[in-house]
Image (cartoon, rainbow, N blue to C red; front, side):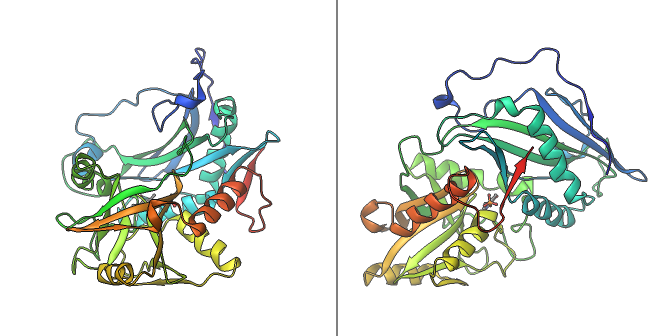
Length: 357
Ligand SMILES: *Cc1c(COP(=O)(O)O)cnc(C)c1O
């Protein structure tokens, strides 16, 4: 493995005094990880350096054509003071799935997990300790060729930055209002929906902005072709409990991001004896279940919120209040178990956590 060169900052920043006001992704730690890719050399010069601006040529490709992708994961401080990551191998494997689709050179997954560990160790004092807080880890890659021709880049940067983040639910697990998006689409088969391509988020903002204006937290995306199959919620995967059966859209169409939280929820629920089905699910089936009283629960899953219960779902003029707008039993159980494993309060029988020593 390549050696990671470490240059420590000579002017460390003040750490946030009030951990209840951290929010999400607004504060960054003292250091970042960088490495470069140059054709003929591969990925080289892995280094940890003081956090700061990265010079870019105005013609840098990522600024024009969006050849860029990213990951999102967290480091957790346990009660005994240990630092844990949650399934970091899955993040790096998924980054290579994104890389492949975007003509970005593959990374060495094991090495990049080691890079995450090394950076978290350097900035370990930045991991907040208050209940529900964590250190968000953002690995990302962008093309820097100074060239306006539309071609896969030959020069790229892989970076990792860290951000202490607050408890997602400061006031307890609160159900959110969601509407079903009928104007815009996020992804289509053959596109990039299954990747964490930066461009996927650029094209989703218009819908997000309109939803917020109407008082909704997120949109529920339908498939881009038939406009009837449920895909996901904002940047979360989505689960429904209909008549006691847990259902989540299958990933077959290639237009849904395969979340690590999604995968973990499926494995957890099955280990608890629940029936979980991955299949196509039409919006009409949800409406029918609602009308005959078998729509039990709905929730989103993702690294940031872990579990986000859905209290209201709107489709056109149809307003559906789910479980009286309260958090359902399965959502609560999943949230307690997953966060319990992540913060080391519950024994990890699955081998999902990785200690940063
Ligand atoms: C990141 C992301 C998710 C959730 O993935 P996790 O690995 O669970 O964090 C779901 N959908 C989209 C579109 C995403 O970008």
